[in-house]
Image (cartoon, rainbow, N blue to C red):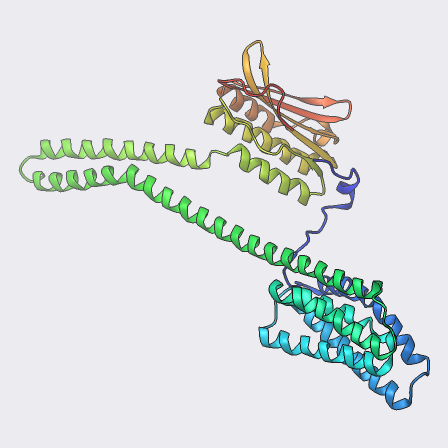
Length: 398
C-alpha cells in the first residue's frame, strides 16, 4: 500500500464514520460544516431580502419563512444522516420544505428558486429511493411553475441542477445505508465467530477431560469400596488415578499451548493497528501465503513479527515501517521469509532487541528457521525465515 510519507509525523488519520451520529462536539462541528457549506445557495434570497425591493411586511414574511425553511432543512438532513427520524417526522419536515419553497418563490420572485435545490437534496437524502426518483423531478416541475409566475419560460441549467443534485443525494443516502448494514453485519459476524470459538473450546475440553474425569470418578469409587478389606488393590486404583490425572494435565497444557499459539494473519492485523496508533506509516502485505508452512513455523514467524513491531513502536523512533512476506527458494530448500524494516535507530542505543532477540532466535531454530537482524543504511531490518514444505510463488508478497 502507498501512503503519505509525512503521515507518520502527523499521527493517524481520523476514521470517517459514515452513517453514524456524531460522538462529541468536534464531530458535531465537522458535520455542521459539511452540511452548512451548501447553504451558499441562500445568498440570492438573502440578498433579495436586504435589497429593499419588498414591502416591510413582505421582507418580514420572507425572513421568517426563510428561517423556518433553513431550520427544517438542517434538522432533517443533519439528523437523518445519523439517527433517522420516524417516517411521520420526515413527512412533516419534508412537507414544510415543499410548502415554503414554492410559496416564497411565488410570492417574492425568482431569486428564491434556489430553495428548490434544498428541497431536492432533502428528498434524495431522506425518502426511500422508489419515492425519491419521483419527488426530485416533482421539485424541478414546481420550480418551473414558479418561474412561469415571473415570466421565465426557458428550461435552463438551474432546473437540471435541481435534478442532478437530488439524484446524487440518492446515491449518497444509499452509500450511508449500505455502510450501516455492513457495520451491523460485521458486528454479527464477529459475534458469531466468538460464539463458534467458545463452542470449539467447550468441545475440546469435553473431549480432553470427559473421559479422564469419568475414569477418575469410577476409580475413586472403586478405591473407596476396596479400602477397608483390600488396601493393596485400593492403592493400585489410587496409582491409576494419579496416572490418569497427570495425563489429563498434560493434555490440557498441550491444548492451552495450541490456543495461545499466535497466527500470522492475526499478527498482521494487529501490526496495522499498533503502527497506526503509534503514528507510524505502515506498508503491509495483503495476506499471508502459508502454503507448505506448518503451524510451529507459522507461530515462530508470528512471534518474530510481534517482537519486531514492538521494537518499532517502543524503541526505534521510526515513522515508517515495511513488512514483506515472500516465498523464496534457497540452497537449503524453499522458505517463507518475513522482513520487517523501519527507518529508526533499531532500539535504544542501536543495540537491537536485547534479550528478546535471543529468545526469538531460539524459537526460530526450534522450528528449523533462522533470524538475521541489524542496521542497514536506512534504518533497522529484521529477517526471519522458516522452511516451507512446498514452494509457493517465488518472490510473491507485498
